[in-house]
Image (cartoon, rainbow, N blue to C red):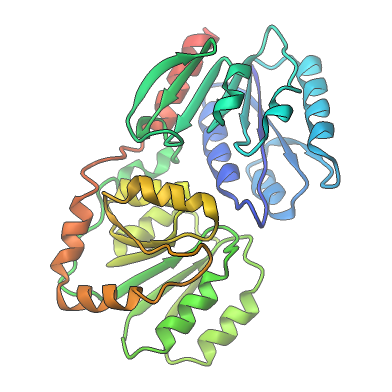
Length: 341
């Protein structure tokens, strides 16, 4: 069975939609689906997909959304896929309305704004509306909400609750998304280098980070002990070995923190991440977002507190309470199979 996935990534919107689409595609491929990606021209995103060996239809980056949707409609009517998955949460209503319908295709939305739900047969909303997991019907569409439907790589499930409480705060993980759109790598290094702490720092650089030379220069000019890491295939594993994580509030990163039980201080790079952090604020994170893109001074107080009271890291971790189990893709695949059969 053919299945199409329409998703984009880029410097401003990040790579989260691409990563979770690839994880879903890999699971579907294992069930016998032929997966085809339909995505806008972007070197990093296109390389991530190509590295997995998937056939890809690439839309020129100078095309309007209407042109892309017209081409998407043409592909659907020519290929008649069993499923078409669209992970493109920011489309305004006029673009959703331009989707044509092929009777033999099941239209699946991922994290869809409420105005777009009526254009789909199935919608998996993750935590867009609520953390509470439930199923309902809206505009004739089956809607699945909550943490039970978060898309996390099945390979990460073995790391569930893998974080262990340290005797003291020594190891820090810095991870700011696939593109680090707010330059938090540079900003955090400046923050740490101005203090007298002696942390072991792992700094993860996503594949879309463009200022690597500036980051390397910043490290060389400091006395910080920094291990610069790129091409990281399993971020949750690094989370389990860190005493404390600093991250942006992307949904994928928050989901992986919840899965591993790792305590974290989070900041928002862009506006929509503020909403993500707010939903998780009662769990295992300390949300220090003030203005998106700005590194907050209050983090110094947090770190001094955890240095004096490392047991509070354990207390923070325990707030995750097994919130995310990493079975989201398995649940989604079972729903696909029930329809496909």
